[in-house]
Image (cartoon, rainbow, N blue to C red; front, side, top):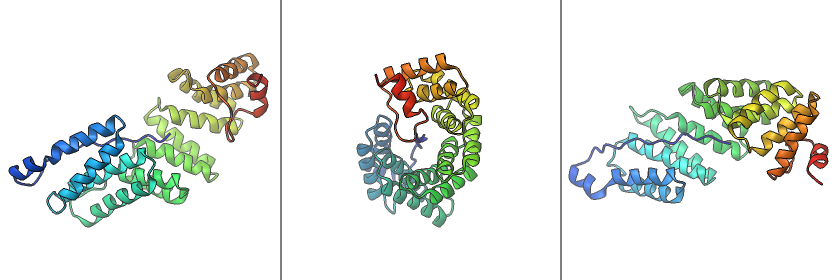
Length: 257
């Protein structure tokens, strides 16, 4: 799960009233944001792109920066990761080039998330570092950096980052789940159960969390409770995949009947 904080900044145009009325960029931006908020990301991208094209050399640079990072967010939702990297990098370069334009942490976060999807783990970690340096409470950056550290074998750093994310946002389902799964893999079952309980309390039909908690409960001898979790996960259609904490043996015993 990659949590994305959507941006919406009202545009105040530094153009004549007649030009602003003719082009209606403010209205187009609002429609783009509304489209993105309901999952119509292709429509949003088209609108952001139209504004960027029409307003070149007219709008102040900070508004171009806002448009770029918003369009990057829609590209991310469509899993067009090269376009995410292109727009986020353009936002960052514009901020570096123009005085008075600040880099939004979301630009670094989105670029890092896209790089991670493309397997560029070190580059992703670097961008998550920059995100956090700008905004120390940017929860998704901690959570995604934790996943990146885990992929590199840095379990201690991953645990630290998951805990940092949860210290800011204790009800972050994906961070609780990922940390719980990591603890299952490390056979730290009681710690795993604590975080997986949080997930199940928030989302009772999160089948992978039930299966992981079943594995953890089995690990400390709570066999009946483990079976209940396995059975519920199976009822919800859970099938283990490579990397899931539930063992194939446990799945076969409780589901594959």
